Picture (spheres, rainbow, N blue to C red):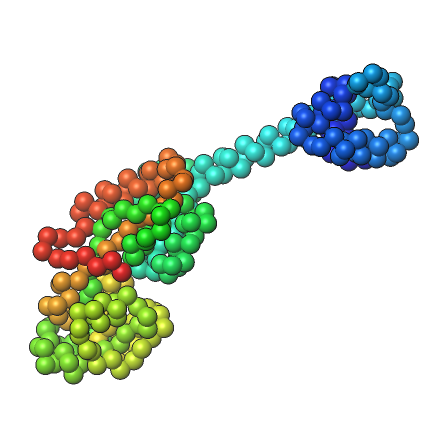
Length: 304
């Protein structure tokens, strides 16, 4: 005897018709009849008899219906309670995605402001490279995301929110740390530490610069370690190098051509998904910050 069988029998007893009950509970008539036979076999009782085009519940059937009523009510209450709990959890949860730089150095501050303004919102932050983040948004793994690539997928909405400049830094112990600015000749000879496949390397290539790269690193963390060890100059998003500059183990080196590069950030979400109150709150904070930190006049934004 299963709860499913009891629910079917309850519907049949209410409708006094197998056909009508099947329509009501959206199960095929043969399936309803099969479950009723199994229930009768399990109970060892005749629960109903055919009567014209419908059925008539036997005395034993009425006793079973009466005994099953509190059980079915309890199950219905449990289902409703679970639905409400799930809905409540979804209402208070916001799944946010971010590419490495905004995910590490921009979004934490935005999320802090979000939870201070809306304590009931519980954000979940996930990070990944731009292609991965785009897939997460499309698959519903995250509700909204900040990326450094403008997506061209027809199901995604993208809005430019701000940009981030690139800075050149070197270890405070490196001989170049005393040179605030490099001449063009010095630039061609200076050792650089770069990230393989990084967006910054792509932009350097686009503007036609050939740097003397002495070390290629797989990640930004490895590049930071290599620069701090004195292997050469590192090019970073400003947010990524900010802590090192404040603490003094990185020293900035001025390179005039870097002022012409800004990496644009975009907030993205699915067209098919309406903006929930939580998403709107998050967007509002992003837009507020974009007023002060978006692309300055005279500088170009790079979608990378």
